[in-house]
Length: 157
Length: 157
Length: 157
Image (cartoon, rainbow over all chains, first blue to last red; front, top):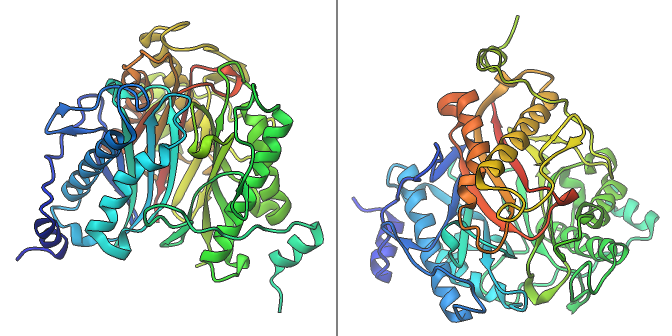
């Protein structure tokens, strides 16, 4: 039997990357604490192939940054799925999403960049995908990527 | 019947701005997940009039930054109130507050800037307003504003 | 009777600093909200002696940054212990850790810096110390320190 969210992913033509293990220390890609599933900050990569290395506003346009945000968010979902034993239907709602954009000082459209991640959540989860959010422009990122996205999900009780 | 916190706001002469809807995507200003109310990062604005565009340390003094932090925190409260059906008395405590300051590299007094938000919470909620906090100086912010404040509240069970 | 985690700290030869009260506002070093203990962002200090003032990539190497991250994480544990009435055994798991590195724009090894904090958690708590994590490079920090580490712990029900 396929889950409701898996069916929606298929209907939308959205494939998730592998949930890649962290290369360092004993970090978890996602960690369930009570009913909150904390997902680690995800970079734009596909099965270990790291993409979008550079700064939005210099190396990438806002549109490219949105694409990088969406790719990071696909990795967020991949880690959530792995931590939930493959069952994304256990997610009751997307509680919070934070997007850290590796941006030039004059790039005030950082929220528009992170929309690439936010819109994916609403596509996949519908109303339950609407979330609280924080966006900040930062100096540098792991691997020098353009964006990192983290999330907290509420899991069904 | 007026709530206890509403009475305190009135007694302190503190008016809250409107809880403005996000302009983009399907972001929530505040989102209740279990007993945690996540409030989105708020910028210094009054009913859509965005203020304090610029960098603390260059365009604004620390004292001005504190004022911007307080204004951001008023928007945090406005969104919390809207998400709680108008009843701020449902807040048991302020759990966590994060302040991201758009600061020059030499502005080491970033914590003093965020105090403008922290002090508002203690004025309004008393001991229950004392919170865990994180402060960081960042590169750029949505709209280029000087500060963004987010919070997590514990709601009564 | 000594706690299990206290015994492990002793066996590892790890001493914790004092949980220093915040100098400003009415901030809590740690704040219990439901079963989540939120610990404020901690800087690398030992009993009030602030260390590692400067930027990783310019003033400090990655190895020095790791040391600063570990020292910040010792302060995280000190505040957790103080908030839990001295009993670190009440911690069920480390839910989330965030490391904000005061880094030059070209320092892409920011995750390696924060490993100094992550590894401490695994040393002390074993498997329960494995956590979700986010790392970002930022512009400036309180006191101009090289790193700030915050954490959220799940407390036993």
